[in-house]
Image (cartoon, rainbow, N blue to C red):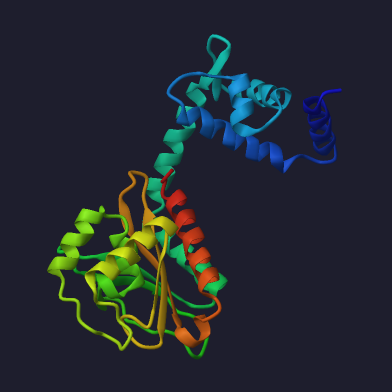
Amino acid sequence: MSAEDQNADAEKGEERRGGSPQSVTRVIRLLEALCASTEPVSLADLSRRLATPKSSLAALLRGLADEDFVTAAESAWRLGPGAFGLGSALTEARRRLQSSDLVREGMRRLCERSGETVLLAVGDQEGDQVTYVDLVESRNVVRYSVSIGDRRPFYATAGGRALLSTCSRAAVDVYLKRAALGQLAPGTVTHPAALAQIVDQARERGYAQTVDQAAEGVTGSASVIRDASARVVGALVIAAPSGRAQGRLDELGRLVLEEAAAISRSLGFR
């Protein structure tokens, strides 16, 4: 018996014991793979892309074909009319559910997971300041507090640096030449070359982090949120007292990166 047959038999055993959540995941991944392809995809190619036995995929494809979600085309598969109908229904549902609600829900999740205050920061039209437009406060007695509408400079904040990381290096250099890089706290980085490297690092990691930059005693971790058109909605920020954040910097960076990605997916970004 081949390894593929053994895997298929194991999966059938799981389903007989009460249903396989793995099959649901595979249906989603299967539809995503077909959605990402401009041409029909063969069963063998789908098996390679999804690292799934062909026999398992064939059964899923037959079920999807029965509901017109996929269509066979010259020994390959493509999305069917049922998938496009579902896509239209989901788009309409997302339109009814305001994106601000989805962002706010993600902010609450991140606050619960991190135990810290979570902010949403957006850039102004001039590209010099971020404005905090929403927040969910930590339940800790000692916590970072800010008011909605407060503004901070891009170069000294995690949210601002995360937003800068979505720009080209040339655009960042233009900003750094234009901005008044003042010393906001004893440790504020103000040298343009150093700031450019920091933004490059944020671009590579997917999140920005500051310790005692815009104000002494405050640590920020931020990652950008994008919508279905890949437009930057804003920066999701965890703001914590530096004393409590020390030793958690990697964890906070991971949490904000994961939640920003989750919110972006809920807004339709792929």
